[in-house]
Image 1 (cartoon, helix red, strand yellow):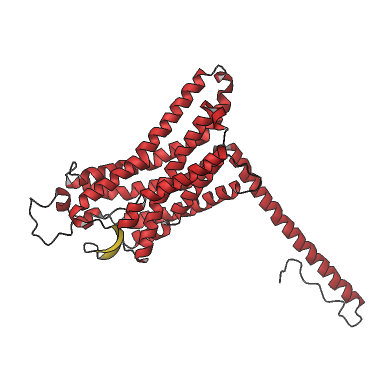
Image 2: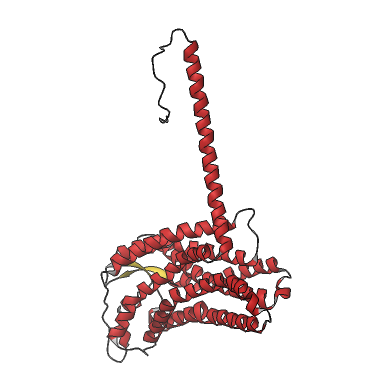
Length: 376
C-alpha cells in the first residue's frame, strides 16, 4: 500500500524532447486536477482513525499479553494482526500532515522511505495474518487431529514467514519512494520516483502486484477455506446439534475477513483501474481524473480496517470480551486499592497530628484541622 503516487502529476513533467502526439501518452496529456476538500477532510479522517485504532489495538495487545491468557494459534495470529494494524497507524500522523499541507512532505527523505515502507509492510502483513486465521480455522474443524501436532511451533514459524514475505513485498516501496519537487504543486512531495522512461510500466506493475499479492491470492485461499469448512459441517451427522457452537467459533474470523473485504475492496478496485489507465486501457481524461480524486478516500477506508478489528474482537469474540473486561476490573481494583491505601495513610497522619496538638500545652486548641479533601 502506498499513498497516491503523484503519478498524474509526475507524468506531466516532460522529458527534454519536444512533446508530440506520437510520444506522449493519453495519461500524460491529461491535465492535473486536485480537489481542495481532500486536503481538509482526509487529515481529519486520519486523525480519528489514528486515535480509535491506537486505543483499540493497544487494548487487544494488552489483553493477549496477560500472563494467564491462553497461548493458542488464533491468539498468536490475532496478536500479530493487532501489531500490524498498530504499526500502520503510527504512520498516519505523517500522512495527515502531508495532506493538510497540500502534499508537502516536511519530514525528510528518510522518514519518507520509512513511513511508506512500514505502511506497505503492515498492509501485506494484515491480509497474510487474516489468511492464516482462516487456514487455522479450516485445520481445527476439518482436520482437528493433524492440527493438534506441533500447533504453536508451526504458528510461530508461520508468523516469521508472514513478516518476511511482507518485508519482501514492501521492498519496491523502499527502493523507489523519494522526496521530489513537484512543479505543478510547488511542493516537495513523497512520491514513487520510478525511472521516467518506464514510469507507466513501473506504476502499472506495482499496482497489479498489490492487487494479486495483497488481495486476490489471499482472498482465494480464505474463500476456499470457508467453502471447505461449510461443506464439512454439512456432512457432519451432528451438524444440526453443534451448528450454533461451531458457528460461534467461526463468527469472529468470518467477521474479520468480511471487514477486511469491505474496507479494502474499494481501494483495490481503484488501484486496478489506475493500472489500466497506465496501460492506456482507460484513456479518457475524466476517468483518470476521477480515479485520482477517489483513490485517497478508498485508502481512508482501508485505514479504517485497523480500528474496526478491535471492535470485532470485543463484540463478536466472547473470550476476548471476557479477557478485556477482566483486565478493566483488575485495573480498577488496583486503582481503588491504591486510593484506599493513600486515604488510610492520610487518615492516620491526621489522627497523629490531632493527638500531638492535644498533648501540646502551647498549641492553639481552637485552630481547625486541615480540610480532608485538600491534597497537598
